[in-house]
Image (tube, rainbow, N blue to C red; front, side, top):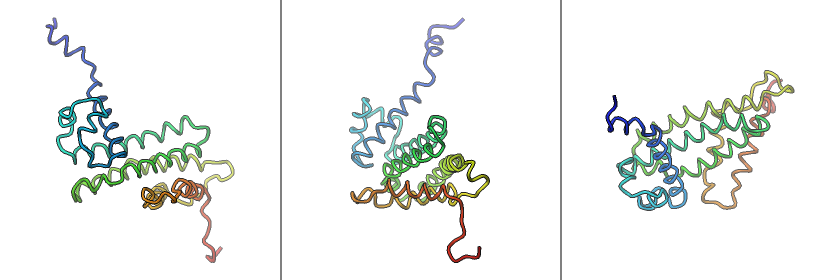
Length: 205
């Protein structure tokens, strides 16, 4: 027979601590986007509706919080791929919407790596995590969008990795130049990625 303490423990919702941590990360991401990665912890706590001590209990240092926010955003971006593919009218629409989310992610994470205070090992680990999680998602969306009856078995003009790399390059400077229409350029790149792979001009036919 359970005593009272055991009954209390058994009745606690197992997922609550994780949900609370996810809410903190959502709040931190929003504050970082608005105020930068050096925003005061009290601003994050106010956004989340918790005390400063709660933030430090989950994330003892700022680099710990920064890494957690980065990974949280990568996971959200990765999980959006299958969801968009299931909910969108066409695979191409899913790909374009996901790439738009990816652009938002790249802009949002601006400055996160520098907040690690030159920790090259940590930055390298985050980059590897980023590639491992997002390239397969992009690849699956790209392949689904190109699986059309008018182009059976054709190779894509770009791989999933190349598409993400190209989007990343196009996003450089987007946050500092209001006249730079990164969304339009990125969608043009997606259109190119959906074409079949043709020989370069001047190459043997």
